[in-house]
Length: 262
Ligand SMILES: [Fe+2]
Image 1 (tube, rainbow, N blue to C red):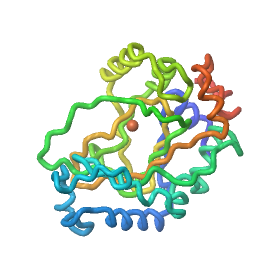
Image 2 (cartoon, rainbow, N blue to C red):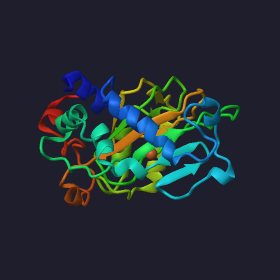
Image 3 (cartoon, rainbow, N blue to C red):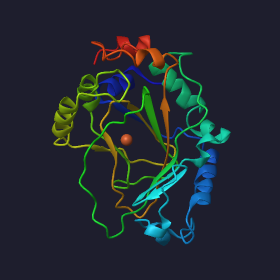
Image 4 (cartoon, rainbow, N blue to C red):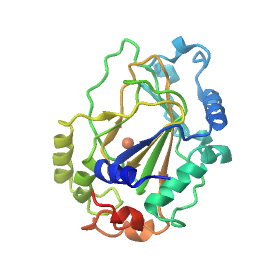
C-alpha cells in the first residue's frame, strides 16, 4: 500500500514511481508475446535488429499493431486476460489505485492499452523534449516497465507539477475540451522546466495524473523500451466528465487522498 508521503508526492508532482511491483512470469510472457507483432527481420534474440526507425515497408498504420518511426504500439494482446492481470488487476497495482481513487469505485478493466515500445535511436539524433496531455477521459494512468529502462532509454518522461497547471485549462474535468490559449500557455511554460526521466527496472511502475504533461522520450540506449499501459477510471466518469474543473481538483479522489495536504 502507499504511504501518506507517497500520496503527498503524487498530489504535488502528479506522478509516483513504485519499484519491483509486476509479476516476473507475466512480464516474461509479455516480452515473448511482443514478437508476434514484429516485422520480419526484427528478432528478439538479436538486439542489433531493434534499432529504429521502422523502414517504410515495416510501417503499419493499423491501430492493433501500430508501427511508425521509433514507436511500436502492439495493442492486439491488450485484451488478453493475462495481460489485464499483468498490470491493471495485479493485486498490488489495483490496491494502490483503489487507495487513491476509492475502494469499489473503479471500472473493471476488460483490456489494457497494450505493449508500447520505443526502438533505440541508433545514430538518429533525439528530438527536442516537449510535453502534452492525453485527451481521453480517465483518472489515473499507470505505466509498467516489463523490461529494464536505462537512463535516456525512452522512459515515460514527466513534467512534475504540470497536472495542477493543466487541470484548469480544460473546460471539462476529464474530456479533451480545453481553452486552447490557456493550454498552450501552460505547455510553453512547462517546456522550459526540466522533465523527469522515470527510468527503472523491469517490474517498476509509474502512476500519473490524467492531466500531467508527459512524453514518450527518445531512446538513446541499446535497449528496446517495453512498457504496458493502463488508464484507471471510476464508474461515475460519465457524469463527472460533464462537470467543469473543480476548485478542489482532488474532489473525485479517495477520502484519504483528499485529506492529505500538499
Ligand atoms: Fe500521451
